[in-house]
Length: 111
Image (cartoon, rainbow, N blue to C red; front, side, top):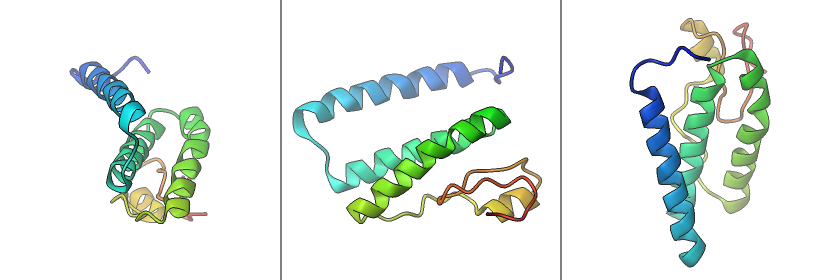
């Protein structure tokens, strides 16, 4: 976990600060459907990126991915985040990936 490329820690810090600012702003005014969708896409994107860091992390993040998928469905929001299907990501040499429906694959089979 201590092998981040230069700039990654700074970018992660900026994302965390932006998330705090967004949470503070939304606390006073609420969420629109578009803002909710954008926030969920950000969560999904970060979840997929973090899942690449270690198998234990990937396993733990399944719950986060499932939760954002459930929120999308319950609110009738679009579910496509542009993430590759698990089989395509695995076939391209990635060690495994979280997909929109949050299946984890490491063998190219999907789930």
